[in-house]
Length: 74
Length: 149
Image 1 (cartoon, each protein chain N blue to C red):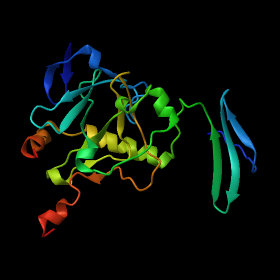
Image 2: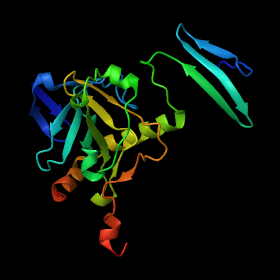
Image 3: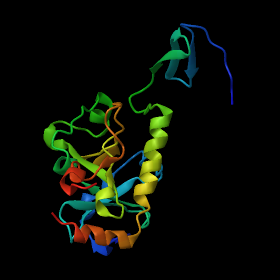
Image 4: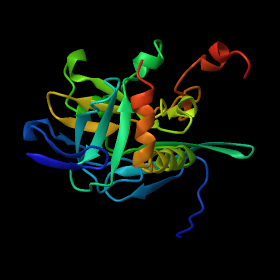
């Protein structure tokens, strides 16, 4: 992993068009501003991992559980 | 065309109904084409089946059937990537994590799948809202009806 030290208002450039800037440092929290093309999805990592895990779980339903859908018609 | 599905065997679908997911779904980034297949035994649910991998399929449902006041806003980037021009271009489905017993199943309201039926583009949209759960009970208030639990 590349490790860079930055101060407030300094930034990191990723490739041509992504900029990550340290906007504020407040105690143990750092506020980052991210400038990236709209096609780049930006998430809080823990939320992304949570959704990934949830998708994996949802995709791992065994076929016999499908019987439940037949039984639970509204 | 014939589509091999995980849950429904081989089904016949209209090739024009295939939806493109250019970035896949989190955890499934290589799955870029899906078809929505009706679940014959229960009209409330559908299967979002990957065209490429027969084993990649999600059970999905209309979240508004279960949560009447579910709402969120689409940001510019998804409006642009799905080529959304009007409300008619937005179809929302929610991935179901099916569990036994059925009423312990959950709906992923935090990351709805947004599909534009006109442009045939789709994307799983992760909401930046802390109050919307990724594991919402499929039967809100079911425990109230059940009484003893």
